[in-house]
Length: 122
Image (cartoon, rainbow, N blue to C red):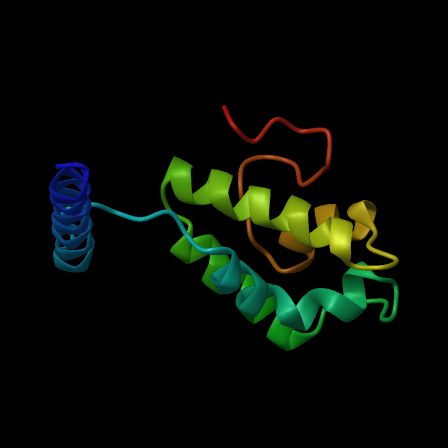
């Protein structure tokens, strides 16, 4: 009996997953931006935020603008900020002061500061 119940439960969760995936693909549910997108968009900024260059590169600013456009909703912005906090902890020499200057240096207004102390969840 337990085997049949387990199979039914797995089947139900599989179907829920399929429906959820179909809704995301069709635009019914907007998924938050992924950390891989954030990492990819901001990869050109690594030299600047670690002090290796005095100005952000053109590719960095292009990535900042791309990320700003992609993270259009509050959940996307919270997800992007959470990713940045996580990434910063893994990058030796990461300078929050430089990260905070990126939007202005690249001509983008994101509407909040980039700092490890800001509560991005609200």
